[in-house]
Length: 208
Image (cartoon, rainbow, N blue to C red; front, side):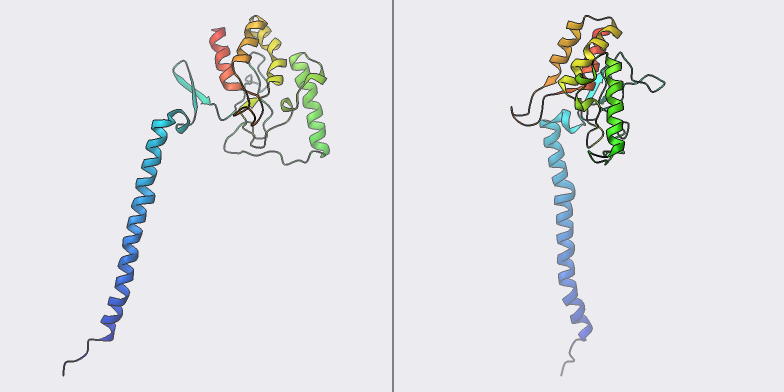
């Protein structure tokens, strides 16, 4: 009578089949979702949306000066806003994309109320306009703290100051603002807006 195979070998074979199946599934899914899918998506993005896929970068004089998706400061070496350039809205992170987020202060917080009141006076004085003409986005930051856009109203109150600082006709600067004003997406989503970086790049080309 032939002796029965040890039970250990049966257990090993029973465990080996599902283990091998699991390994094959892991390898197949890794190849599919970790290699083929990213390559396909990257290829489609580079072919169809090359500019957006590479960060929506803005170039001037043959070098990259920023991204149209991330705002930046336009200050003098001492940290004061430079009168030669259109200024963005306030940023809680000084436009550092590594530290996005608002101040988290509520609309009725006394600190925020006083900060906005003081900012309104400063913006009015800097641009030579009445306090009543200062729009909300000129004195309040965005939720992300890196919003690259300002409202057409904020761009409009800066036009005279920018024109005078650069020795340009006001009509010429106003034309640039109009050319860089985007309307609502699909005609009804969002609000009209002006990309500060793109506007200042166009302004620099006009000045030089």
